[in-house]
View 1 (spheres, rainbow, N blue to C red):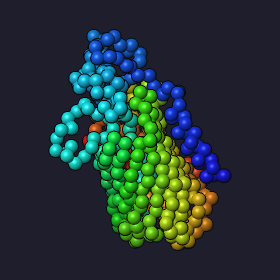
View 2 (spheres, rainbow, N blue to C red; view 1 turned 60 degrees about the vertical axis):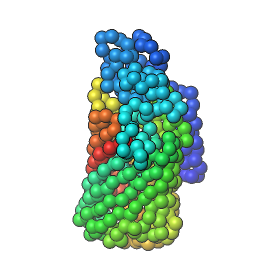
View 3 (cartoon, helix red, strand yellow; view 1 turned 90 degrees about the vertical axis):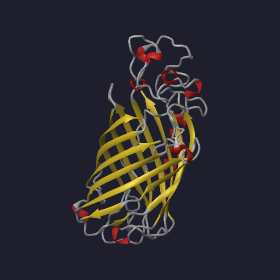
View 4 (cartoon, rainbow, N blue to C red; view 1 turned 30 degrees about the vertical axis):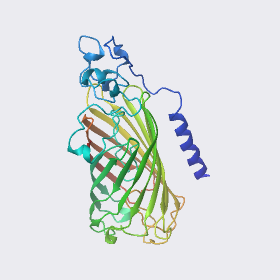
Length: 365
């Protein structure tokens, strides 16, 4: 029944996102400057000078104004600067040496920010070329012998085409004061993500993908167990109102050796609000983990690992853990994000999470 509800929920979300409800209002203009209804101009479009025309907008980024709109007028990129077809992304200089090796990320959704928590599995639906540096300070409950785990990691994403990207979502080094977890290297995950649907005029998109976690980490750090694990996921996002965004992702974590690791179904949600006239965002997130089947490898305590670990614990099937997080992000421009989020379980069950501080810094091309 839970799997049927999951499939129904995912299909419902996909249908809603491709429906006719409008998530935000956008200003469409032709090449010639024309008067602007300021009430319809969202903060991400920049600010109007006294002239009251789209050509007077300042700090307008390609992808914020849609079609042959304000971005084209400000940057003088021509009509292809809008988000029609594959024209999005002409603004800015992509003729440097990086263009020989990398494809620029999607420029049609530059007012979105990436999720913070469940960092390994909560995937941004956009096609991106970026490096994301992550620091986690993870406190372990006394029921799991206490202490803390610190993680330093680097995620990499590279757009191969307008819709296809390669993603490397897990790696890093752990230090720990918990007696069950020693210092060492994390497993490594990589895979592909493909954009199934996008509507820049409504600021909606939907993507699907997979990763495979290679058990190459340090066993003393409770990594490197099993024969690997697949993550099959669906992720989407939409803008609603003038400065609000919702991103949601759900997927199945399926180990190739079910006796060594547990099978998990997760569902993560992110809502943010851009503070008026600033580059700061307030965000809230929730993550739900449902253990579909138990492993047979770990019976020291009735706990599982959530997003960072998979112990393969005996007898956890049917259990759930839900976490909630609040945070803030600063986005000086479309090519950089700096974020902080504090996360804690909302359920009585905590597994190995008492609370967690997540810090990330993203650089995009």
